[in-house]
Image 1 (cartoon, rainbow, N blue to C red):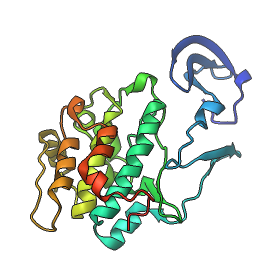
Image 2: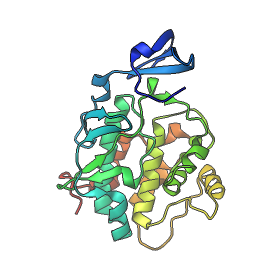
Image 3: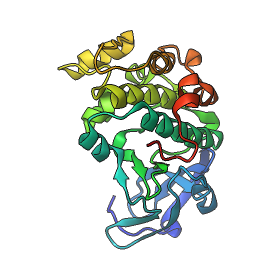
Image 4: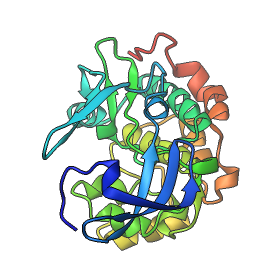
Length: 268
């Protein structure tokens, strides 16, 4: 099937396959080649309806013969990844502020039936006011549940796989059906890494990392110092049974967040 600039008239539309939060899926056949495909129809208004202070806005999109362009809100301070490389680890006040902002953004996304699934330092951005930003890189799901085929394997094949495989929740490592609570697990992993400067489950071999994730093999070293309250939050997020992980609302009510997060969003 040749790749070209198609239009709806190029396809014979067949039966309805399914429907998600943002659009519908149909069986279709490309007229010239006869190739059978799944045609997913997204509604522009629904794709652009994520409007939250801590979520980067999608203003518009356009394309030319070879490329697709997204017009996004600009976060001038750049990625958390670069900031972490410079600072090595975050103070508890800074991190609590970031976590509170991220929890609010995720709660909003989950309410919209959007699971992020790709929370990592280079998808977390800062603007001039040091407010926390979340890029919405993952798609919508119906009823907030999904099946991510070959989750562990496909994630590790990405260029930046080092960030991915150590962030996967146990249910994703096991390639099980999962819901939005995978994002809560990732928050726990990031809290640990941002406070200690190293990830909680990293091993020399990625499959050893997977084994540590499945065992929830978390070790809190004595140095650098991390408060008992911060460790408590991490321990309540890194729980294998997703139904027992701390909810986003409970994260915001956790004593460590309440005591350390800066309401202004600065965290310094």
